[in-house]
Length: 139
Image (cartoon, rainbow, N blue to C red; front, side, top):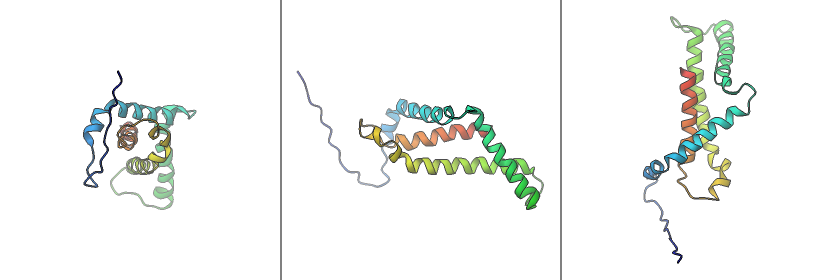
């Protein structure tokens, strides 16, 4: 005997009414997407996970040379290299989260058309994978 289970989808009453309960119930899927994002970004590079450290360090060296030496914009009483490194790491986290979450629904439209799951999981997975990278770089 086959039973048809139907679900009625109704509009939300409030714009900021997020269904965080369903995100928590599907946390295993969230962690799977975080792992996918993390692995796919650094698996395609020749240097792999070393790119975590190389990218901000090279950018900091360039900033130190241009702003610290040539522009003479050195922070007083603070190490110039660490000052620029902290700013670059924070800015990269913010910029990557903003850029990748804005593209989330377009980049994953194939997944959304095949199966139902809470759509909020995709932006959360981007934020968490970037937070993981931020934590490693900050350490």
